[in-house]
Image (tube, rainbow, N blue to C red):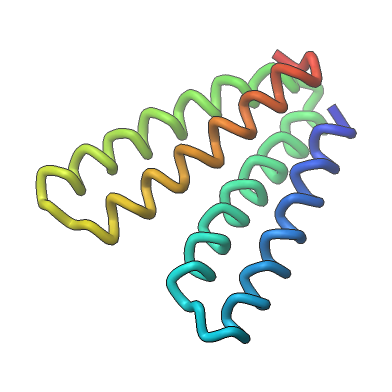
Length: 110
């Protein structure tokens, strides 16, 4: 589990660096999506670290499902409102979460 958390933290740092580089190139939209992805990795690393300290790493999987449900509902609401920016943000969050859950499973943390 510690390797999983460290990998998420490394991904978070790399995405923040990429976002900074994109902002320096005046690519603000791309930077926003890097930052959104970075935030997902940071949130997931943080909640997993908390559950690991509590001795309940399996709770991470349940939290990921909760995130998927909440972010999926936000995506559907954005689609109903025809809010293109919000649709892109929610899709980006769900894409990053899919990567996190795949890494979680690959690490045998389920």
